[in-house]
Image 1 (cartoon, helix red, strand yellow):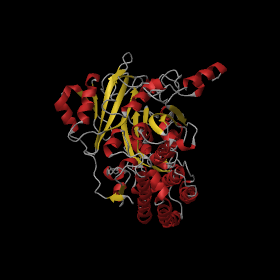
Image 2 (cartoon, one colour):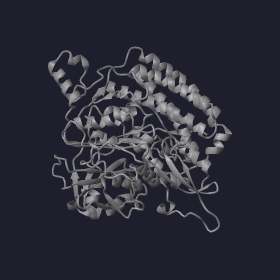
Image 3 (spheres, helix red, strand yellow):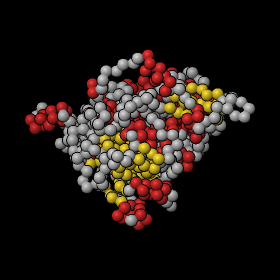
Image 4 (cartoon, one colour):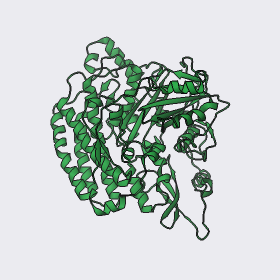
Length: 593
C-alpha cells in the first residue's frame, strides 16, 4: 500500500470573505465591531450574549467553519493602543477555519475584570474543552457549562493565573522556593487520580475496573505525558490524558524578550522542528513590520525547513517501528538524521536548535560548498526510504499491528482540530504550502500525499511520502537558488547586515539599539500559520508599539492531537494505544509550551 498524491493549483484565501456580510445580515451590523489587523482574516468583536449563536451559525453554514482552530485570551489592562476597540479588561478570541472557503475568521468577546465568565463552546466543538481549561488556568476566565473546568498546564495546587499582566514573569520576583515534607505530601495527594471526578465508575455489575497509569515516565508515552486508563481486562473503557509536565511558560517569556531575542525560544517548542519553529514567528513579525524579504531568503528558509521536516519524520519513523516491536530500523533512521544534521550544521553552525532565521532574513549567507553537501544528501536518501518501505512498512507484523488501528475519518479529524499528516491520512487534501502558500512555496513543484483509511498505518506511510516530496523541494532549491542578499533592506530588519554596520554609522547605531533594546514594532496584530512537521503551527502576535510583544499566542498541532485520544481509542486494546501514540508523532514541548 502506498500513499496517493494530490497536485493542484495554489489558491490564496480571499481578502474580504463574504462571511462578514453574512454575519451582519444575520445578526445586524451594529452587533459586530470589525477590527483592522494584519492577521489575514476578518476579526470581529461581538457581545457575550451572541457568542454561542454566532459560533453555531458559522459551524452550520452551507460552507461551514468546520474547525475550532484556536481559542485563547488576552489581558487587555495594560494595552495602550487599542484604536477604538470595545472597552475590555480581558478578551477571549475564537479562531475558526473553513476548508471549503479556504479562509478563517476570528471572533472576540470583551470581558470586564469583575465579570470574567463566558458560556462554554464544548457543545459546538468538542475540542473547545482543553482550550477553555487552558484559558481558565492561565487567565482565570470561567466557562459556564464546561464539563470539567480544572487546571491543565499548572499543577492542581497552583495559586494565581500566570498569563495575567499582574503575575510575575521572573523567578527573582517570587519568594524563594521551599518544599517541606508536609507540602510534598500535599502535592503528591493532589496528583491522585479520582475516577469519580471524571464521571468514571470504579466497577460494573460483575467486576471491578482497573485504573492504570501510563506515564508520565514511560517510553511509550514519548515524553512527560500521563494517560490514566480505565480497563476492563485488556480493553480500554475510557482514558484521561494529562499534560502540563513540560510547561515552561513560553508565552509568558515572550512578554519579557525583545522581538529579536525571542527567536531562540521558538526552537524549544517542537524541539525536533528546528528552524521550522522560527518560520511562523519571523513571518508574523515581518507582517507587523511590513518587511518583504528577497527571493533568496525565501528559498533558503524553505530548504532548511524541509531539511528539518525530513529529520523529524526520520525520528518518527524509527521510533514508531520500534514501538510496534522492531529494534533495528531506529539505528538506520538515526544514521540518516546524522547525514541531514551534517548539512544543517555546515549551513547554520548548529544542529537541533539553530535559531538561524532573523527578522527580515537569515543569520548569514550560504557557505561555499553548501550545494555539494545538499546534492549528496538528495542522492542518498531516496534509496534508503525504499529500503524502509520494503523491510519495515511491508512487514506483516507491523501491518498487523497498525492497519485498522486507531482509525478516524475526516469529519472526526476536523472536529478535534487535527491537522498535518493525521488529517491528510483521512483523504482530505489540505496542506497550507499549497492551499495558502507562504515563504515562496508557490514557486515549487511538489505533491501532497494522501491516504484514505485514517489509521495508524496510513499516518506512517503519509510521512514517508512527505519525505520524498521534501527532497523534491530541496532539489529545486539546489537547482534554482536565486542570487541576491540574504536580508531585506528595511530599517526593522534585525540585525542589519554586518558589512553595512562597518560602513555606516547610522546602521551601526540602529544595530546597537535593536540588539540591546529591540526593534520597535508598529501597534497591530498579525498571525502566521505554517505547515510544520507535526501539523499546522502558528504565532499570533499582538504589538502595543513597543520593543517586546504584548501577547504571543503559540498554537501548536500536538495539543489538539492529544486531546483527541479518548475519542479514538475507547474500546481498543492497550497494545493498540501504544501504536496509536506512536502514529500521532507528538512532542510534549509542542503540547505544553
